[in-house]
Amino acid sequence: MVEFEVGEVPSNSDGWGPPESSSPTLYVPNHPSNVPFAPFSRSEKLGRIADWTRSLTNQGRPGSKQGHHPSDSAFDFSGDDSFATLAADEDSSFRLVDTSAKSNHHQNGNRPKFNPRWRFNPHHQRSQLPQRRDEEVEAKKREAEKERARRDRLYHLNRSQGPQRRESAVFKSSVDIQPEWNMLDQIPFSTFSKLSFSVPEPEDLLICGGLEFYDRSYDRITPKNSRPLERFKNRNFFKVTTTDDPVIRRLANEDKATVFATDTILSTLMCSPRSVYSWDIVIQRVGNKLFFDKRDGSQLDLLSVHETSQEPLPDVKDDINSAYSLSVEAAYINQNFSQQVLIRDGNKVAFEESNPFANEGEEVASVAYRYRRWKLDDDMHLVSRCEVQSVMEVSKQKSFLTLNALNEFDPKYSGVDWRQKLETQRGAVLATELKNNANKLAKWTAQALLAGADMMKLGYVSRVHPRDHFNHVILAVVGYKPRDFASQINLNTSNMWGIVKSIVDLCMKLNEGKYVLVKDPSKPQVRIYEVPPDAFENDYVEEPLPEEEQVQPLAEDADDAEVNATAKDVEEKEIIIEAA
Image 1: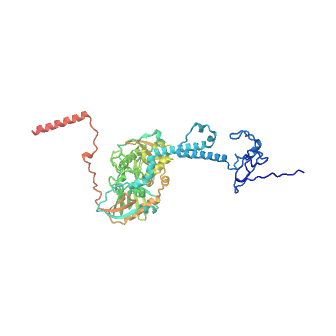
Image 2: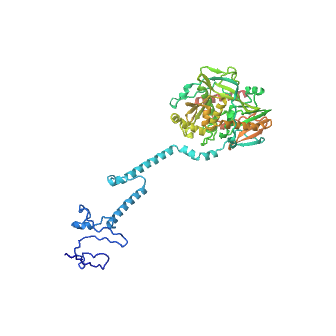
Image 3: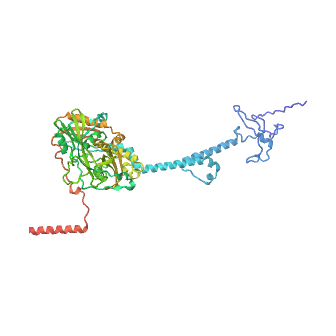
């Protein structure tokens, strides 16, 4: 029987573990040479001691000792993660260096630096290339965003700072409030939003004037085949107030109604909560009748432009883009547009009476006046003169049309270029106009509803050049049904008549006399003033500017100047001779 002999276990007085085999005094028999020893503490878990399944193909790897015995590789755990060896510390330090290089790269700048080593290193291509591509994409996005912000800088600036700038704008009152006027009441617009009143269908008392047919070829106009806007200087347009209308005077004498007005005045009252600029309406109480009038040269004869926009217009009156200049320009555009889109072949639709404001042989614009009556109460009726500009045959029936034109003066103010957007994004153009001209579009819709028009045509007219306010082109013409368009712009018919009914009831309680209803220029409210009976009858005329402030005519040619100077000298000599 073979006995198992236990070898002598030497003691190590210098520390833990077996003594070094190189010591001549302490020798462990049968101990393989060059076996590494991993120091450990008692709190650590021990790994394996030897791995006999390890492959021996990496004996010649860099860093290995030549002449290393194959059996010793079983005890070599220098590359094993189980032991915190110096090699592991070196690897970790290498990774830390790599990480610090990445952080320095982010600190140095957003744009990566490419070099030949990075380009041909497969490890960098796999790990960092997607990240650098994402950075390039983000950089391109940022550049595109900056370019978009630069291109629309004015528009975005107006949107962010518009309300403050709009509130800071100071508007003037449409009429000078005199100290002897007595303010009777003040009505905020917030009370108008709660009003509601339903009226039955109106009846036509009389139709005067004549209408020409609408030219349907204008419905096919696009910005690419636009047509220049013509001028109709020979046709007369009439803006007659209520009490100067002979037909209304005749209806009042016949006691056909109690309240009399025009569609322009009624639409101003109906859409007053949307108004920003100041306006005024003269109210006359005569007996049991009530007349709503406008002053001569009133703002109601003009058309507001960019009234509800957040971008304020220039305050200088002589500027072509000021509020007053644009209002006059819009009025002329609207008149010329309403006559150009007609078939001017002499074929007219005549009504019961001719134009009540035209003289014999005078060429008048195509317009028909419908005198319509609404029932406001059992003993109260309202008569209004309503206008339609054209007629069109639809299914062998004649349909009335109203013709109005929106005008573009400078795309920088609206942020939308009609020539680019009308053909592809017409809805965006209309939405912008509804934002900038909400009151004007609402008044046109109210006038179409009052006149009983079957269709309202809106033309898009733009300047040939933003600095040329004399020449214009028609870019497009779009038709809408008034009721559908009213619901689209959130115009409530019951609320419109509720406002009119409340103001009529308030005025019927007043004594006989003359009053004026004024929209406050800075607050959303209206005021009622009692004015003298002779107020507004002899309105002042603006005094001419001094010669040094007047716009001088173009300089004459040198020859003409010399001729004029010579003629002046001759005249002076003749006067001197006569005096002598």
